[in-house]
Length: 88
Image (cartoon, rainbow, N blue to C red; front, side):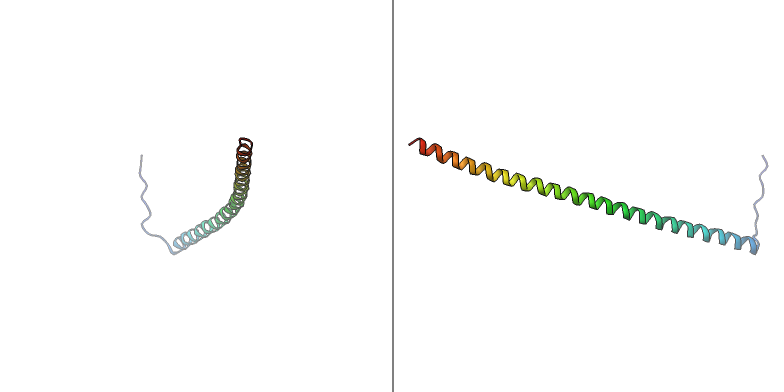
């Protein structure tokens, strides 16, 4: 296999062409990252909404449990009072 010699000097036109290619590549990358950032931000907003829904559900379940416990304690107190009155 024969190795090709690399170019040791670059003309101004080739350097300008390389500069343009690199600049366009950087701009494309920045554009892609900007689009990606917007997409990620949108997804996080959606996830935040879903988390808020879950928080509301948990709050509702907690409220129901507290009310149920309060009702149970009231029934227990009334039941014990009734038993103590009947037992006399």
